[in-house]
Length: 187
Image (cartoon, rainbow, N blue to C red; front, side, top):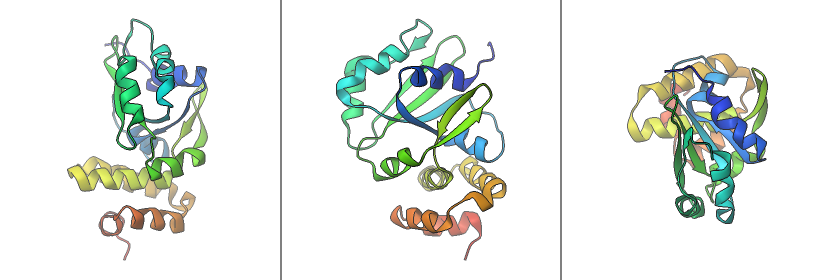
């Protein structure tokens, strides 16, 4: 399988068309913390359902398996948990695209996303507080310890870079205070 840059494959097309997005999930955790293997990128995307064809344009090449406009329109119209996958066929790399919808945490994080230089490009990355909250929520839902490792690596690397007051507010709103205490060791 040819090696490909996840960001070049999936983020560059979004940048070219001027989408409002942020990279999150394991890629964001790696950029804030420590590297690990992944073959997908999680992206939160703001998309008006009426502009669904714009997303199909971003991934119009035969190299991509992108959902049809109707599916994108339906998913992007959901107030929460709207989601599609885009597959890069030559490499089997995948983008999980989550639509911002009305989800308060996405709406909080998008305007606070950070421009981060990564190789030859600058990408929009979710704030670290958002990454911690989402990783802890996924840990609570599925129990996968990779989320705990990601959070601990992020905390070790960016301990002084976090807004702890904001983080505690976000954790409380998501009902994750006990999970935070368990993972962080904070009393």
